Structure formats: C-alpha cells, structure tokens
Length: 117
Image (cartoon, rainbow, N blue to C red):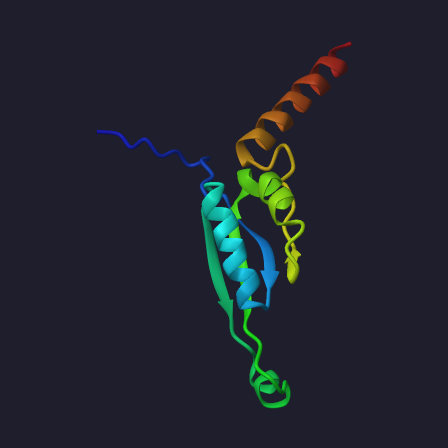
C-alpha cells in the first residue's frame, strides 16, 4: 500500500494576520471571522520579564492567525476595527514550492532552447 503524501507537498497555510492589545477588539475580530466563515487561531503573547516589571498597567497582546487564502477577505472585513494592526499580506502567486520548481524548470528549458540556436 502506498501513501498519498508526496515529499513536495506543502501544508502550512497558516499566517500571522493581525495583532491587537484590546480584549474588545479581539472579541469583535472573532465575531467577524465567525460570521464570514474564516477559521482563525488566537495566540496570546506573553510579556517579557522587564515589561512586566516596568510596563505599568499590564496589557494583553494577541496575534491572530488565519489561512493564507482568507487574507484578502479578512483585510476588507477588519480594516475599520479600531485597535487592530494588520501585519499579514497576501502570499505571492508562486508561494508554493511546487509552483516555484515548475517555473524554474520552464526557465531552464527556455535557456536550453536559446543555446541550441
């Protein structure tokens, strides 16, 4: 029996999308994502030792991660929420290692054809 997994498959489609320090903004983000069927993961950012000592009032920091394919839609939906810093951007068209390999092979073939002339 053979496996359906190949060595050149790429599965990590999750990317950092935005950052917020407000619990209200985080709740609003979650509501917007759930209404629009965007899966997400909220990562709690812990403060460093010196920040906890000298930082004064403790603020929680959250990083929201979403799927690469949803970044364009999420950017439109989140643009007007205050307290949210968008840090993600859409991936390049050939972000897949397989697509990059195909493009490199095509360039090599074109170069070989040029050298034959």
